[in-house]
Amino acid sequence: MKQFKNKQLESKRSLQFHIWLNLIFFVVCTALLLWIFQIAFLQNFYEKMRTHTIQETAHEMSDSFRKTDATDSDELNKLMQKYDSFALDNDFSYIVVDSQIAYLIHSNDDNVIDTTFSPKVRSIMARNASLKNGYYETSQPGPMTGSEAVLICTSLYDSSDRVIGYLMISSIITPVNSTIHILKQNTYIIIAILVIITLILSVFISQSIANPIVKITKSADKLAKGEYNIKFEGGRFSETRKLAKSLTYASSEISKLDELQRDLIANVSHDLRTPLTMIKAYAEMIRDLSGPVKEKREAHLGVIIKETDRLASLVSDMLDLSKLEKGKQTLNISTFDINSKLVDIVERYKGLSGAGGYTINFTADTPVYVKCDVVKIEQVIYNLLNNAINYTGEDKQVYIEQILEEKYVKIIITDSGNGIDEENIHQIFDKYYRCEKTKREVIGSGLGLSIVRAVLQKHNFPFGVQSKLGVGTSFWFKISRDSETICPDNS
Image 1 (cartoon, rainbow, N blue to C red):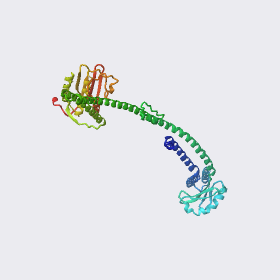
Image 2: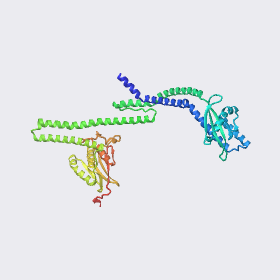
Image 3: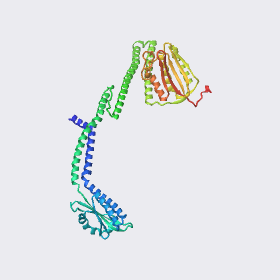
Image 4: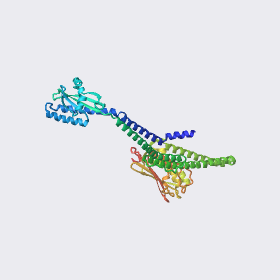
Protein backbone atom coordinates (compact mmCIF):
# COMPACT_ATOMS: atom_id res chain seq x y z
CA MET A 1 0.00 0.00 0.00
CA LYS A 2 2.80 2.38 0.94
CA GLN A 3 4.67 1.59 -2.29
CA PHE A 4 1.50 2.27 -4.30
CA LYS A 5 1.07 5.65 -2.59
CA ASN A 6 4.75 6.48 -3.25
CA LYS A 7 4.34 5.65 -6.93
CA GLN A 8 1.25 7.84 -7.11
CA LEU A 9 3.14 10.69 -5.46
CA GLU A 10 6.09 10.29 -7.82
CA SER A 11 3.79 10.30 -10.85
CA LYS A 12 2.22 13.55 -9.63
CA ARG A 13 5.68 15.06 -9.26
CA SER A 14 6.86 13.90 -12.68
CA LEU A 15 7.72 16.29 -15.48
CA GLN A 16 5.21 14.67 -17.82
CA PHE A 17 2.38 15.22 -15.35
CA HIS A 18 3.29 18.89 -14.83
CA ILE A 19 3.53 19.55 -18.58
CA TRP A 20 0.13 17.93 -19.10
CA LEU A 21 -1.35 19.87 -16.16
CA ASN A 22 0.01 23.21 -17.44
CA LEU A 23 -1.33 22.63 -20.94
CA ILE A 24 -4.77 21.69 -19.56
CA PHE A 25 -4.70 24.86 -17.44
CA PHE A 26 -3.91 26.85 -20.59
CA VAL A 27 -6.88 25.31 -22.40
CA VAL A 28 -9.21 26.06 -19.47
CA CYS A 29 -8.03 29.71 -19.39
CA THR A 30 -8.50 29.99 -23.17
CA ALA A 31 -12.00 28.53 -22.97
CA LEU A 32 -12.89 30.88 -20.11
CA LEU A 33 -11.70 33.92 -22.05
CA LEU A 34 -13.64 32.80 -25.13
CA TRP A 35 -16.81 32.41 -23.06
CA ILE A 36 -16.38 35.81 -21.37
CA PHE A 37 -15.69 37.82 -24.53
CA GLN A 38 -17.74 35.85 -27.07
CA ILE A 39 -20.83 35.02 -25.00
CA ALA A 40 -21.25 36.59 -21.57
CA PHE A 41 -20.42 40.22 -22.39
CA LEU A 42 -21.03 40.24 -26.14
CA GLN A 43 -24.35 42.13 -25.88
CA ASN A 44 -22.82 44.84 -23.65
CA PHE A 45 -19.79 45.19 -25.88
CA TYR A 46 -22.01 45.44 -28.93
CA GLU A 47 -24.26 48.11 -27.40
CA LYS A 48 -21.35 50.24 -26.23
CA MET A 49 -19.53 50.00 -29.54
CA ARG A 50 -22.74 50.75 -31.46
CA THR A 51 -23.51 53.81 -29.34
CA HIS A 52 -19.90 55.04 -29.59
CA THR A 53 -19.98 54.72 -33.40
CA ILE A 54 -23.19 56.74 -33.64
CA GLN A 55 -21.77 59.39 -31.33
CA GLU A 56 -18.67 59.75 -33.50
CA THR A 57 -20.84 59.95 -36.61
CA ALA A 58 -23.00 62.63 -34.98
CA HIS A 59 -19.83 64.67 -34.34
CA GLU A 60 -18.85 64.40 -37.97
CA MET A 61 -22.37 65.30 -39.19
CA SER A 62 -22.45 68.34 -36.87
CA ASP A 63 -19.10 69.54 -38.25
CA SER A 64 -20.41 69.17 -41.81
CA PHE A 65 -23.50 71.22 -40.95
CA ARG A 66 -21.33 74.05 -39.53
CA LYS A 67 -19.64 74.33 -42.91
CA THR A 68 -22.99 74.40 -44.86
CA ASP A 69 -25.24 77.39 -45.57
CA ALA A 70 -28.67 76.11 -44.42
CA THR A 71 -30.44 78.88 -46.38
CA ASP A 72 -29.08 77.60 -49.68
CA SER A 73 -31.23 74.72 -50.96
CA ASP A 74 -28.47 73.32 -53.17
CA GLU A 75 -26.02 73.10 -50.30
CA LEU A 76 -28.74 71.61 -48.12
CA ASN A 77 -29.41 68.93 -50.73
CA LYS A 78 -25.69 68.11 -50.87
CA LEU A 79 -25.64 67.90 -47.08
CA MET A 80 -28.64 65.57 -47.14
CA GLN A 81 -26.87 63.29 -49.62
CA LYS A 82 -23.85 63.18 -47.32
CA TYR A 83 -26.08 62.46 -44.29
CA ASP A 84 -27.89 59.72 -46.22
CA SER A 85 -24.51 58.12 -46.91
CA PHE A 86 -23.67 58.20 -43.17
CA ALA A 87 -27.10 56.72 -42.35
CA LEU A 88 -26.72 53.94 -44.91
CA ASP A 89 -23.21 53.04 -43.80
CA ASN A 90 -24.11 52.99 -40.09
CA ASP A 91 -27.71 51.78 -40.29
CA PHE A 92 -29.58 54.62 -38.57
CA SER A 93 -32.29 57.23 -39.24
CA TYR A 94 -31.94 60.95 -38.69
CA ILE A 95 -33.71 64.30 -38.84
CA VAL A 96 -32.44 67.86 -38.79
CA VAL A 97 -34.78 70.54 -37.41
CA ASP A 98 -34.32 74.25 -37.05
CA SER A 99 -34.71 76.15 -33.83
CA GLN A 100 -38.46 76.28 -34.41
CA ILE A 101 -38.54 72.51 -34.66
CA ALA A 102 -39.35 72.57 -38.35
CA TYR A 103 -37.87 69.75 -40.41
CA LEU A 104 -35.03 70.80 -42.64
CA ILE A 105 -33.79 67.43 -43.88
CA HIS A 106 -34.40 63.86 -42.84
CA SER A 107 -33.87 60.24 -43.88
CA ASN A 108 -36.01 58.79 -46.59
CA ASP A 109 -37.86 56.59 -44.13
CA ASP A 110 -41.00 58.66 -43.34
CA ASN A 111 -42.45 55.91 -41.18
CA VAL A 112 -39.45 56.07 -38.88
CA ILE A 113 -39.81 59.84 -38.61
CA ASP A 114 -43.45 59.66 -37.71
CA THR A 115 -43.13 56.81 -35.20
CA THR A 116 -39.70 57.48 -33.73
CA PHE A 117 -38.93 61.17 -33.77
CA SER A 118 -42.30 62.92 -33.67
CA PRO A 119 -43.32 61.74 -30.16
CA LYS A 120 -39.97 62.79 -28.77
CA VAL A 121 -39.15 65.93 -30.66
CA ARG A 122 -40.97 68.51 -28.54
CA SER A 123 -39.99 67.00 -25.20
CA ILE A 124 -36.34 66.82 -26.27
CA MET A 125 -36.27 70.24 -27.88
CA ALA A 126 -37.62 71.70 -24.63
CA ARG A 127 -34.27 70.74 -23.15
CA ASN A 128 -32.24 72.55 -25.79
CA ALA A 129 -30.12 74.23 -23.11
CA SER A 130 -28.60 70.88 -22.22
CA LEU A 131 -28.02 70.02 -25.86
CA LYS A 132 -25.57 72.90 -26.21
CA ASN A 133 -23.17 71.11 -23.93
CA GLY A 134 -23.21 67.71 -25.62
CA TYR A 135 -25.43 64.74 -26.26
CA TYR A 136 -28.77 63.77 -24.95
CA GLU A 137 -29.27 60.03 -25.11
CA THR A 138 -32.25 57.87 -24.37
CA SER A 139 -33.17 54.26 -24.97
CA GLN A 140 -36.59 53.20 -26.11
CA PRO A 141 -38.26 50.18 -27.74
CA GLY A 142 -38.01 50.16 -31.48
CA PRO A 143 -41.19 50.91 -33.43
CA MET A 144 -41.36 47.70 -35.43
CA THR A 145 -39.45 44.97 -33.57
CA GLY A 146 -39.60 46.07 -29.99
CA SER A 147 -35.81 45.98 -29.99
CA GLU A 148 -33.79 48.45 -27.94
CA ALA A 149 -33.15 51.72 -29.79
CA VAL A 150 -30.78 54.54 -29.00
CA LEU A 151 -31.79 58.16 -29.63
CA ILE A 152 -28.99 60.73 -29.81
CA CYS A 153 -29.53 64.47 -30.10
CA THR A 154 -27.00 67.24 -30.53
CA SER A 155 -27.10 70.95 -31.24
CA LEU A 156 -26.13 72.32 -34.63
CA TYR A 157 -24.16 75.56 -34.93
CA ASP A 158 -23.50 77.99 -37.68
CA SER A 159 -20.11 79.53 -38.41
CA SER A 160 -20.70 82.09 -35.64
CA ASP A 161 -21.32 79.33 -33.06
CA ARG A 162 -25.03 80.14 -32.75
CA VAL A 163 -27.47 77.27 -32.24
CA ILE A 164 -29.64 77.19 -35.37
CA GLY A 165 -30.94 73.65 -35.25
CA TYR A 166 -30.78 70.16 -33.85
CA LEU A 167 -29.65 66.76 -35.15
CA MET A 168 -31.47 63.65 -33.96
CA ILE A 169 -30.27 60.13 -34.75
CA SER A 170 -32.13 56.93 -33.98
CA SER A 171 -30.59 53.49 -34.32
CA ILE A 172 -31.96 50.10 -33.41
CA ILE A 173 -29.58 47.91 -31.42
CA THR A 174 -30.36 44.49 -32.74
CA PRO A 175 -30.35 41.74 -30.07
CA VAL A 176 -27.49 39.29 -30.55
CA ASN A 177 -29.12 36.31 -28.85
CA SER A 178 -29.08 34.23 -32.02
CA THR A 179 -25.46 35.24 -32.61
CA ILE A 180 -24.58 34.31 -29.03
CA HIS A 181 -26.18 30.92 -29.52
CA ILE A 182 -24.11 30.31 -32.66
CA LEU A 183 -20.94 31.53 -30.96
CA LYS A 184 -21.66 29.33 -27.97
CA GLN A 185 -21.90 26.26 -30.17
CA ASN A 186 -18.71 27.26 -31.98
CA THR A 187 -16.95 27.89 -28.65
CA TYR A 188 -17.86 24.41 -27.40
CA ILE A 189 -16.51 22.88 -30.60
CA ILE A 190 -13.30 24.94 -30.36
CA ILE A 191 -12.83 23.93 -26.70
CA ALA A 192 -13.32 20.24 -27.55
CA ILE A 193 -10.77 20.49 -30.38
CA LEU A 194 -8.35 22.34 -28.09
CA VAL A 195 -8.66 19.65 -25.41
CA ILE A 196 -7.95 16.87 -27.93
CA ILE A 197 -4.99 18.75 -29.43
CA THR A 198 -3.69 19.57 -25.95
CA LEU A 199 -3.80 15.93 -24.86
CA ILE A 200 -1.90 14.87 -27.97
CA LEU A 201 0.60 17.71 -27.65
CA SER A 202 1.09 17.13 -23.93
CA VAL A 203 1.97 13.48 -24.54
CA PHE A 204 4.32 14.37 -27.40
CA ILE A 205 6.01 17.32 -25.66
CA SER A 206 6.30 15.59 -22.29
CA GLN A 207 7.86 12.52 -23.87
CA SER A 208 10.21 14.64 -25.99
CA ILE A 209 11.40 16.54 -22.92
CA ALA A 210 11.08 13.91 -20.20
CA ASN A 211 12.46 10.86 -22.01
CA PRO A 212 16.03 12.24 -22.38
CA ILE A 213 15.95 13.30 -18.72
CA VAL A 214 14.70 9.84 -17.69
CA LYS A 215 17.54 8.24 -19.69
CA ILE A 216 20.07 10.63 -18.15
CA THR A 217 18.70 9.82 -14.68
CA LYS A 218 19.02 6.06 -15.26
CA SER A 219 22.58 6.52 -16.53
CA ALA A 220 23.35 8.70 -13.51
CA ASP A 221 22.07 5.91 -11.22
CA LYS A 222 24.49 3.52 -12.92
CA LEU A 223 27.26 6.08 -12.50
CA ALA A 224 26.46 6.31 -8.78
CA LYS A 225 26.88 2.52 -8.56
CA GLY A 226 30.38 2.70 -10.02
CA GLU A 227 29.72 2.11 -13.75
CA TYR A 228 31.93 4.80 -15.24
CA ASN A 229 32.01 3.72 -18.89
CA ILE A 230 28.66 5.35 -19.62
CA LYS A 231 27.75 7.64 -22.49
CA PHE A 232 24.84 9.89 -21.56
CA GLU A 233 22.24 10.52 -24.28
CA GLY A 234 20.65 13.98 -24.39
CA GLY A 235 17.98 13.63 -27.09
CA ARG A 236 17.29 16.40 -29.61
CA PHE A 237 17.21 19.45 -27.34
CA SER A 238 20.40 21.50 -27.02
CA GLU A 239 20.02 21.86 -23.23
CA THR A 240 19.70 18.11 -22.60
CA ARG A 241 22.49 17.38 -25.09
CA LYS A 242 24.75 19.82 -23.26
CA LEU A 243 23.81 18.23 -19.93
CA ALA A 244 24.52 14.75 -21.31
CA LYS A 245 27.88 15.90 -22.68
CA SER A 246 28.83 17.42 -19.31
CA LEU A 247 27.81 14.27 -17.44
CA THR A 248 29.73 12.06 -19.87
CA TYR A 249 32.82 14.19 -19.29
CA ALA A 250 32.19 14.10 -15.52
CA SER A 251 31.89 10.30 -15.71
CA SER A 252 35.24 10.09 -17.50
CA GLU A 253 36.90 12.38 -14.94
CA ILE A 254 35.37 10.45 -12.01
CA SER A 255 36.67 7.25 -13.57
CA LYS A 256 40.17 8.73 -13.72
CA LEU A 257 39.85 10.02 -10.17
CA ASP A 258 38.64 6.64 -8.93
CA GLU A 259 41.55 4.92 -10.65
CA LEU A 260 43.94 7.48 -9.20
CA GLN A 261 42.46 6.96 -5.75
CA ARG A 262 42.91 3.21 -6.02
CA ASP A 263 46.48 3.69 -7.20
CA LEU A 264 47.09 6.17 -4.39
CA ILE A 265 45.78 3.76 -1.76
CA ALA A 266 47.81 0.91 -3.27
CA ASN A 267 51.00 2.98 -3.40
CA VAL A 268 50.56 4.47 0.05
CA SER A 269 49.78 1.03 1.45
CA HIS A 270 52.89 -0.37 -0.21
CA ASP A 271 55.08 2.52 0.94
CA LEU A 272 53.77 2.27 4.49
CA ARG A 273 53.84 -1.52 4.70
CA THR A 274 57.49 -1.88 3.69
CA PRO A 275 58.99 0.33 6.43
CA LEU A 276 56.48 -0.93 9.00
CA THR A 277 57.45 -4.51 8.18
CA MET A 278 61.11 -3.58 8.47
CA ILE A 279 60.56 -1.78 11.80
CA LYS A 280 58.64 -4.76 13.19
CA ALA A 281 61.22 -7.29 11.95
CA TYR A 282 64.23 -5.41 13.38
CA ALA A 283 62.42 -4.69 16.64
CA GLU A 284 61.79 -8.45 16.99
CA MET A 285 65.45 -9.14 16.16
CA ILE A 286 66.54 -6.74 18.88
CA ARG A 287 64.19 -8.42 21.33
CA ASP A 288 65.14 -11.97 20.44
CA LEU A 289 68.70 -11.85 19.13
CA SER A 290 70.76 -8.69 19.23
CA GLY A 291 69.60 -7.13 22.48
CA PRO A 292 72.74 -8.07 24.49
CA VAL A 293 75.11 -7.45 21.52
CA LYS A 294 75.73 -3.72 21.30
CA GLU A 295 77.03 -3.64 17.72
CA LYS A 296 74.11 -5.64 16.29
CA ARG A 297 71.61 -3.78 18.45
CA GLU A 298 72.86 -0.40 17.21
CA ALA A 299 72.81 -1.60 13.60
CA HIS A 300 69.27 -2.88 13.96
CA LEU A 301 68.18 0.33 15.72
CA GLY A 302 69.77 2.29 12.88
CA VAL A 303 67.54 0.45 10.39
CA ILE A 304 64.50 1.19 12.54
CA ILE A 305 65.43 4.88 12.73
CA LYS A 306 66.01 4.97 8.98
CA GLU A 307 62.66 3.36 8.21
CA THR A 308 60.96 5.67 10.73
CA ASP A 309 62.51 8.65 8.95
CA ARG A 310 61.23 7.21 5.70
CA LEU A 311 57.71 6.99 7.14
CA ALA A 312 57.92 10.53 8.50
CA SER A 313 59.12 11.79 5.12
CA LEU A 314 56.25 10.07 3.33
CA VAL A 315 53.64 11.46 5.72
CA SER A 316 55.24 14.93 5.57
CA ASP A 317 55.20 14.90 1.76
CA MET A 318 51.55 13.83 1.72
CA LEU A 319 50.59 16.60 4.13
CA ASP A 320 52.58 19.23 2.20
CA LEU A 321 51.01 18.20 -1.10
CA SER A 322 47.52 18.18 0.38
CA LYS A 323 47.97 21.69 1.80
CA LEU A 324 49.39 23.00 -1.46
CA GLU A 325 46.59 21.54 -3.56
CA LYS A 326 43.93 22.93 -1.21
CA GLY A 327 45.61 26.34 -1.18
CA LYS A 328 46.06 26.32 2.59
CA GLN A 329 49.79 27.02 2.48
CA THR A 330 50.80 30.65 2.07
CA LEU A 331 53.95 31.81 0.35
CA ASN A 332 56.59 33.79 2.22
CA ILE A 333 58.06 35.82 -0.63
CA SER A 334 61.60 37.06 -0.16
CA THR A 335 64.51 38.23 -2.30
CA PHE A 336 67.73 36.20 -2.49
CA ASP A 337 70.59 35.31 -4.81
CA ILE A 338 69.60 32.12 -6.66
CA ASN A 339 73.18 31.51 -7.75
CA SER A 340 74.43 31.33 -4.14
CA LYS A 341 71.49 29.11 -3.20
CA LEU A 342 72.30 26.61 -5.98
CA VAL A 343 75.96 26.53 -4.98
CA ASP A 344 74.96 25.85 -1.38
CA ILE A 345 72.60 23.01 -2.39
CA VAL A 346 75.25 21.37 -4.59
CA GLU A 347 77.69 21.52 -1.64
CA ARG A 348 75.17 19.74 0.56
CA TYR A 349 74.86 16.91 -1.97
CA LYS A 350 78.61 16.24 -2.00
CA GLY A 351 78.29 13.64 0.73
CA LEU A 352 75.68 11.68 -1.20
CA SER A 353 77.47 12.05 -4.50
CA GLY A 354 80.75 10.94 -2.98
CA ALA A 355 79.20 7.88 -1.29
CA GLY A 356 77.17 6.81 -4.30
CA GLY A 357 79.58 7.76 -7.02
CA TYR A 358 77.37 10.49 -8.44
CA THR A 359 78.69 13.66 -10.03
CA ILE A 360 76.60 16.86 -9.93
CA ASN A 361 77.74 19.28 -12.63
CA PHE A 362 76.65 22.87 -11.99
CA THR A 363 76.85 25.47 -14.77
CA ALA A 364 76.06 28.92 -13.40
CA ASP A 365 75.27 32.18 -15.11
CA THR A 366 75.97 35.51 -13.43
CA PRO A 367 74.61 35.98 -9.89
CA VAL A 368 71.06 37.36 -9.87
CA TYR A 369 68.37 38.08 -7.30
CA VAL A 370 64.96 36.43 -7.52
CA LYS A 371 61.61 36.85 -5.70
CA CYS A 372 59.90 33.73 -4.37
CA ASP A 373 59.40 31.56 -1.30
CA VAL A 374 62.96 30.38 -0.66
CA VAL A 375 61.94 27.31 1.40
CA LYS A 376 59.47 26.09 -1.22
CA ILE A 377 61.88 26.66 -4.11
CA GLU A 378 64.59 24.77 -2.20
CA GLN A 379 62.11 21.89 -1.89
CA VAL A 380 61.56 22.01 -5.66
CA ILE A 381 65.31 21.86 -6.37
CA TYR A 382 65.83 19.03 -3.85
CA ASN A 383 63.00 16.98 -5.34
CA LEU A 384 64.24 17.47 -8.89
CA LEU A 385 67.81 16.58 -7.86
CA ASN A 386 66.62 13.46 -6.04
CA ASN A 387 64.58 12.48 -9.09
CA ALA A 388 67.62 12.98 -11.38
CA ILE A 389 69.79 10.87 -9.07
CA ASN A 390 67.13 8.14 -9.05
CA TYR A 391 66.88 7.98 -12.84
CA THR A 392 70.34 8.96 -14.13
CA GLY A 393 72.31 6.52 -16.25
CA GLU A 394 75.18 4.23 -15.38
CA ASP A 395 77.62 7.14 -15.65
CA LYS A 396 75.75 8.67 -12.65
CA GLN A 397 75.98 12.19 -14.08
CA VAL A 398 73.52 14.93 -13.06
CA TYR A 399 73.58 18.41 -14.57
CA ILE A 400 72.28 21.73 -13.20
CA GLU A 401 72.15 24.87 -15.35
CA GLN A 402 71.26 28.42 -14.38
CA ILE A 403 70.32 30.60 -17.40
CA LEU A 404 69.59 34.30 -17.09
CA GLU A 405 66.60 35.63 -19.06
CA GLU A 406 64.97 39.07 -19.30
CA LYS A 407 62.27 38.52 -16.68
CA TYR A 408 63.16 35.08 -15.31
CA VAL A 409 65.99 32.88 -14.20
CA LYS A 410 65.70 29.45 -15.81
CA ILE A 411 66.87 26.39 -13.83
CA ILE A 412 67.42 23.12 -15.72
CA ILE A 413 68.18 19.79 -14.00
CA THR A 414 69.13 16.95 -16.33
CA ASP A 415 69.91 13.25 -15.91
CA SER A 416 71.57 10.85 -18.34
CA GLY A 417 69.05 8.01 -17.94
CA ASN A 418 66.97 6.10 -20.46
CA GLY A 419 64.43 8.89 -20.91
CA ILE A 420 60.64 8.78 -20.95
CA ASP A 421 58.29 7.71 -23.75
CA GLU A 422 56.46 10.65 -25.35
CA GLU A 423 53.10 9.01 -24.63
CA ASN A 424 53.91 8.86 -20.88
CA ILE A 425 55.63 12.19 -20.39
CA HIS A 426 52.36 14.01 -19.61
CA GLN A 427 51.88 11.75 -16.56
CA ILE A 428 55.27 12.48 -15.05
CA PHE A 429 53.94 15.00 -12.49
CA ASP A 430 51.08 12.72 -11.36
CA LYS A 431 51.11 11.31 -7.84
CA TYR A 432 53.05 8.05 -7.54
CA TYR A 433 53.78 7.84 -11.26
CA ARG A 434 57.05 6.01 -11.77
CA CYS A 435 58.83 4.72 -14.81
CA GLU A 436 59.60 1.21 -13.65
CA LYS A 437 62.15 0.55 -16.41
CA THR A 438 64.49 3.22 -15.13
CA LYS A 439 63.70 3.29 -11.42
CA ARG A 440 66.77 2.93 -9.18
CA GLU A 441 66.64 1.51 -5.69
CA VAL A 442 66.57 4.91 -4.02
CA ILE A 443 64.21 5.74 -1.20
CA GLY A 444 61.44 8.23 -2.10
CA SER A 445 57.81 8.94 -1.35
CA GLY A 446 56.67 9.01 -4.99
CA LEU A 447 55.21 12.49 -4.42
CA GLY A 448 58.27 14.59 -5.23
CA LEU A 449 57.27 15.71 -8.73
CA SER A 450 53.68 16.31 -7.64
CA ILE A 451 55.02 18.64 -4.94
CA VAL A 452 57.21 20.36 -7.55
CA ARG A 453 54.19 21.02 -9.75
CA ALA A 454 52.05 22.25 -6.81
CA VAL A 455 54.74 24.68 -5.59
CA LEU A 456 55.45 26.13 -9.04
CA GLN A 457 51.75 26.50 -9.79
CA LYS A 458 51.34 28.27 -6.45
CA HIS A 459 54.03 30.75 -7.57
CA ASN A 460 52.59 30.94 -11.14
CA PHE A 461 56.05 30.03 -12.46
CA PRO A 462 56.47 28.31 -15.86
CA PHE A 463 57.82 24.76 -15.77
CA GLY A 464 58.10 21.69 -17.96
CA VAL A 465 59.97 18.56 -18.94
CA GLN A 466 61.83 17.39 -22.03
CA SER A 467 63.02 13.85 -22.60
CA LYS A 468 64.64 11.74 -25.27
CA LEU A 469 64.82 7.97 -25.12
CA GLY A 470 68.35 6.70 -24.55
CA VAL A 471 69.68 10.22 -23.84
CA GLY A 472 68.03 11.47 -20.65
CA THR A 473 65.43 13.81 -19.19
CA SER A 474 65.56 17.53 -18.40
CA PHE A 475 63.22 19.23 -15.92
CA TRP A 476 63.12 23.04 -16.07
CA PHE A 477 61.37 25.86 -14.27
CA LYS A 478 61.65 29.63 -14.19
CA ILE A 479 61.81 32.03 -11.23
CA SER A 480 60.87 35.70 -11.43
CA ARG A 481 63.82 38.07 -11.28
CA ASP A 482 63.88 40.94 -8.80
CA SER A 483 64.46 43.90 -11.13
CA GLU A 484 64.79 46.37 -8.23
CA THR A 485 67.69 44.62 -6.48
CA ILE A 486 71.16 44.51 -8.07
CA CYS A 487 73.50 41.74 -7.05
CA PRO A 488 76.76 43.06 -5.57
CA ASP A 489 78.72 40.84 -7.93
CA ASN A 490 77.17 42.62 -10.88
CA SER A 491 77.80 46.14 -9.63
